[in-house]
Length: 403
Image 1: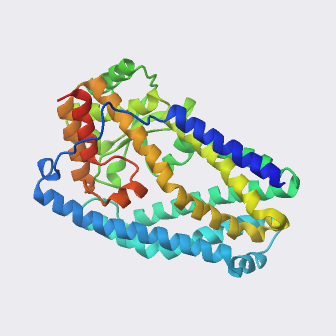
Image 2: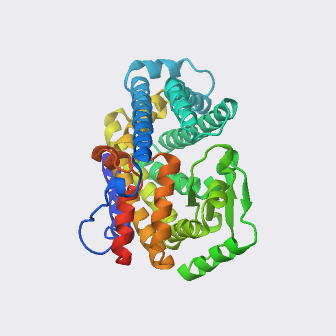
Image 3: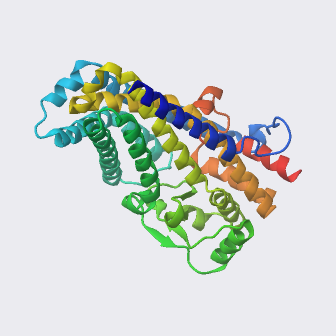
């Protein structure tokens, strides 16, 4: 089993490196290091002060919630507490595994809830959130339910493989979990997102015609562009692409469509079409599937002679603790890749629209509306920043268009 674990780990690692090497844009713009514009040349002093104040509080609340969730998972997974709790649960092994996953997930959610409430309070105080408390709690409950379902599916698949294929489970479980990653990414737009937002097609009119023209110019097939009713939750602006194949779609926040000048909306749309052009969601899914193989291979090596313990639902807290810890440690890798992909989408948008003014204006507006710190601490940006800062994006725009 050790050799098979090494094989699964190696295949996953090689697949991850090959996908990242070939499909991630490590040099998305020409030239050397960027020269960033001064923050006060883009934002007023009042805007900078407000963004810094909010971001400081939100950063510490968010990091605090992460630390608490990791500590809770590790206490349940690496001490006898989790095993003792699971052994007292009723029912056959699948029921006990699901209940154990639910207990671990809910314990983490409940213990981080005070920090989440504090963050929501800050968002309401700064005018970022438009949700009443009951609606926010409803979304928190739905999010917890989704996390429980995802955790339960993962542990059921893993325990089922260890119980059925005692010698070859690392290979079978690796393939099954990689398949679940792909399936989850495929169905997320149609099964999960409607639980939080209502989506309607972008109405016929000049904006829709211009969006379709942009898609044609970028060589992207778009069946539809959807508008999410995000204004019932937030005042911030956003747009995104998710899904792949038949579930791929471009989604715009209604706050973006209603309150942003047309040229700036088209700049954002061109960015999202850049993601679609390069199948960034599918590439990210492939990286996630490769990561699942690596995780199962490592688990097989860690289990070693204690393999028998992985057939028992009492191992569920340990498995989830390893997942939470691994996810936290993998965050910098994920975000380094994400920032490169986002920069390429910016470059594609700039080369398609050739509108430097609109690009700069919308980057500024995105930060002002979301109170994003344009100059975050370097370590925080490296570990947690999924996008380049607005100043970096503006510098890239000037580099690409030569203005």
